[in-house]
Image 1 (cartoon, rainbow, N blue to C red):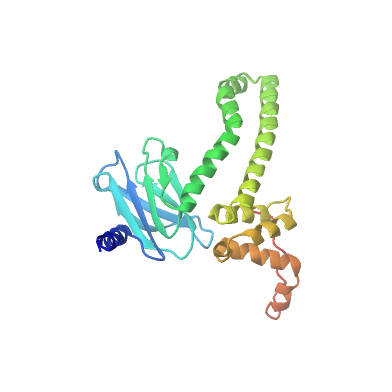
Image 2 (image 1 turned 45 degrees about the horizontal axis):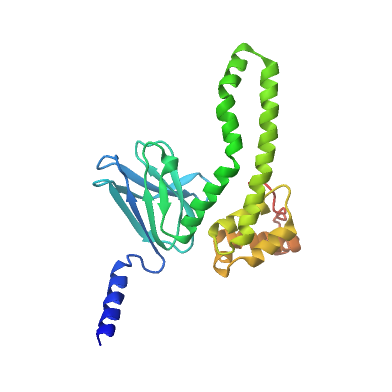
Length: 261
């Protein structure tokens, strides 16, 4: 009987701690050093391609803020803090997302709380390591480049540009490998479906690889907007005349999917 009471008590605690229902999100934020009354703006990409659109705003109170709403699938969002330069990118999805705003260095803000956001943070940390040599080169050689440009020393400018291009090419290749290996090993991550969509829009498209990666995705990701967009392009590539056949009379046939992104 005592065990049953303990189990029931634990169940009550779990239910009371669950602040988010199905299809809901909760952003629990801390904004240390941000004055009371400052606005936090939640933004996402406008579906018509008109930049970012604001979907919600709240005020900071005692260094904290909270935003709650409904969402049907994972999607990239941004947080804009009034009077702070830069935005905080994160993945909004069903669940509780915790964001600790760093007002002095917005890109050092901490994000956690859901699988996609934990993966997003780890993925970015790995990518920063891959790109470190490029960042270090820029940091170490910026004074020399500025001086060479002021004195019109073309020999130094050309030398630095050549070295930079070589490092950039190497880092680009390593980054591409990182994206691919991640998508291959994380079929349940929202980041993977975005990587595959990016591959599909690349000039050096490997259609067979894209199709294989898409097939390995979790079914929940295939039903997202980027997942459906990938499937539509795969279908169009297999049957490019389908859109023309279904077009209204007098309408021009739709071109095949391009590589622009």
